[in-house]
Each structure stands twice: as C-alpha cells, then as structure tokens.
Image (cartoon, rainbow, N blue to C red; front, top):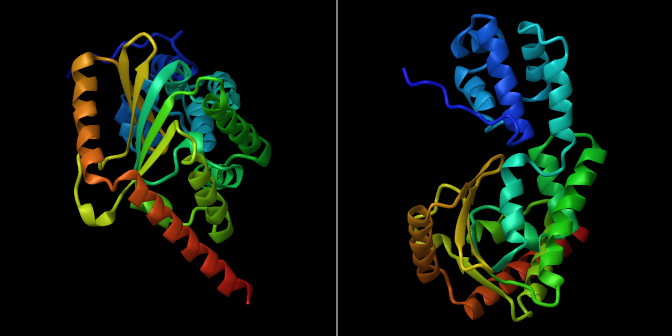
Length: 282
C-alpha cells in the first residue's frame, strides 16, 4: 500500500484540515474505511478530506469531530474554511488570472464567472450550496462579481470563451435570469477584448468533455492551465501538461462555430427565452 501523500498544513486551510483529520484518525487507530463506516460515508470521501481536496458538509464534520475526540477543533477549523469566500483550490488560479494577458476558456455547463450577471451567479451558487445561509451566498456573489473588474481596466486581457451549447440552452435561474444573462453576453462581445464561440451539440465528442478548461498566458510569457468542476479545481503548471491542454483547446476552437455565427446562435436563444417569457405572462 503506498504511503499517504504528505501535506503542507500551511499551504491552505483545506490542507490544515486534512492534516489535522489524518492525525486524529491515526491517533484513534482507525483506517479510512473504518472511520467512513462509523460516520457513515464512503472511505473515499475521508481520503479526499485528508488530501485537502474537499471539505466535508457541516453534519459530517460534526460527526467526525465527535468520533475522533477532537474537542471542537474540527468544528472550529471547518468554520474558518466556510467563512472564506474563495476556496483554497481557486486562490492560486485567481492570482494568475489577475496577471494574465490572455485567457482562453471552455465551459461545459455554465457561463464563465467573468461574464456572469448577478442574478445568474446567485442562482448557481444557491443551487450548488444548499446548506449556506443567505449572507454566505451574498459574500460569494460579491467575490465573484469583483473578479470581473479585470475586464474593465485600462488594459484588459483578451478573453476568448468557447461555450458549450448547454451553457445557453440550460435555463439557470429561470427564463428572466437567462434573458438578462444572454443579453449581457452579447453586450460583452461588442468589446474588442471579448470573443465568444459556441460549440454545438451536433459536433459530438470533443477532448474536454470532463469539465471546464482555462488557459492563461501571463505577462511574463509563462502559460498555465486550470481544470474545474462544480466543487473542485486543479492548477496545472508543468509545461508538458499545459501543452496538452493547449492542443485540446485548439481542437475545440476548430469544432466551435465562428464568432459571428456564435453570436447569431446566442441571439436566437435570447429570442426564444423572450418568447417564452411573453407566453408565461399571458
């Protein structure tokens, strides 16, 4: 059995939590599977918590604290993690994002955060974080919208986004929210530093079907990649791996509709939402 991965507890709150949880579990003489059975949750979740890749829900964390005799330490640490608006796994990426000269993004299900309206962002955060209170959602919305200042500076980066067709067809937040969101997308596309492409359903399989992808070209000339799902992300800095993701993005651009045709598709979807709203109001 391979030795457990060493974590630097100073790297992030999630890493500190994972280190603490592992120490408490080992002290209790339990394997990950045995601890998972006692909660009960899958032992793979315990592994992810200990690796700092995930933070447990509040009820699971409270149970872990009691089972391991943590005397409230896990509860206190969990509270600090939850009060941080931006998760640890996204912080390094956002630091690079703020220094980038060019951003290439593919999103499979949602509008990129830099292009989201407030109602759209709120709807996404509310459905993905059902346990959070309204004030917590408010903090997350503000943090997300603040990132958009990157596009409004004197020398904004080039933002090239490929949107899977699901992004414009899935009515996040309802018809009215989507009308505002698509109208906002079209407005942003009028600026010279924002380019949009739509990847139609009919194009079939493609090399980034597992989630979303961002490639950042930094002002220093260095490139990094970032892959993301709804609750986690991974920053990739190894040149060879970044090159693989860059090739995947090139293939996506070749499959996607040209920018002018893409805007026509977005306008068509917007009119469909407006017609739907009109029917609902009669």
